[in-house]
Length: 275
Image (cartoon, rainbow, N blue to C red):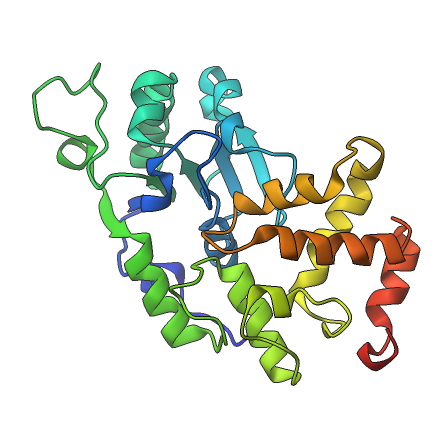
């Protein structure tokens, strides 16, 4: 991956506080998908501290990031380090107690001129208890830039990533970086199912990273239906498609390695022609 421009150039704003609309956050229930899809993008831009509610947390991270549960930090907002990504919805603000948290983070970011990215389901998030005039939102009362994740990710993928996956299939940058790496090494790169075929994945591919998460957390001994567990975990990162097929390929690789890190490392470094 070549060096990237500063985050201000990518976001096309020098305003520290950004409201980022992501339509995948419109649903909060357990059937919702890809609520965390934007995190690999922000991680690549150097923002890996994240606040989100436990409803989005399924004990699996496609990438490594520092997570602060939103309900745990309302009283300790001054201790949170910026830059920061905060994932919530208007429903989360009004119905699940995140209004005070959003207001406190907005005030800190404004006063300290620190990077605060509020990823939400609207371009005009409201704080009803604090901004009571009808129709007014934080966009009217704070110095914020408003962006759209789908527009931003489309431009980013076109300008900075050589992926074999269409943006219409996924806007999760982790998958596109994996596809890019596979293209560079003449490995399957056109679908998620092919990218996660561990018998053909290059040793340096990003697709290996999630396997170490499962090994380190030893979920084999916790859950009986491990394939369903992995499939459910992937839905938080994946917009559409059959996550069970990818989950089964992950599970096959874990079984080959007997859930042992040393064996997984050895398997990863094995020539794909010999796997």
